[in-house]
Image (cartoon, rainbow, N blue to C red; front, top):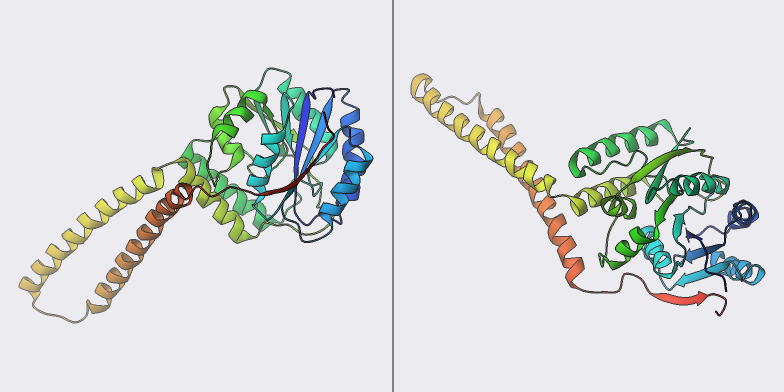
Length: 312
């Protein structure tokens, strides 16, 4: 079997409606590149017929198709990690199964990699998302970049290319929860980005809700930076000094003006603000402790039920 130059890793979760179209467009696009390639589908515990369709596709193109069937749903990034650990190519490309990134655009990130880059991200030219979703994504990107110093213009775009060295470095990490593009950015020496086309979802529905996006960014910020803790520590110092100054002010006012009840609700408001601030801090600290807890349990990140591949 020829060792492939390109490995395309595609996580699949309940995508039975869109997989036939993906197959029809993906393989011709890769054939036109004129490079040895392999396609690694990772079924992330789908509850529909996705696994059966992947088996059928493997039987049709066993020379360039591999399918990893996970026993349970491990999440998109862990599914990609499973694909990375089985990829043999010198350039590894990730792609969503929903066709929002056209397979025909794979050539753009491959071409950029051939210019000497070791990690290439992509930016959607005209996003086919709602105004609210696009705006929320941009706001989260801005906050994430300020906190982590990781510069990813369009973090929600799955079409990306990684060098063999970067993927090997990622495979050495044993984190149970991570954001792969950000992790790759920290390992890359010469990252780049290209603009690609973006289409509406071919079939099915998005697996990311607003809560999932917020959860992802919160996980990203706490996974790659201690800045949130440091900011909260500094905020705590400022609030403590402000509270002490207010306490002194109220004591002086009582001595000068005498007792009064008008400021009672102001004190209640201040108390509720401080309680809310304390609860936020406890939650933030709990996020970091939770990450440590997940890591020290040493549970497997995913369970593989079967691997469909041609015997070498």
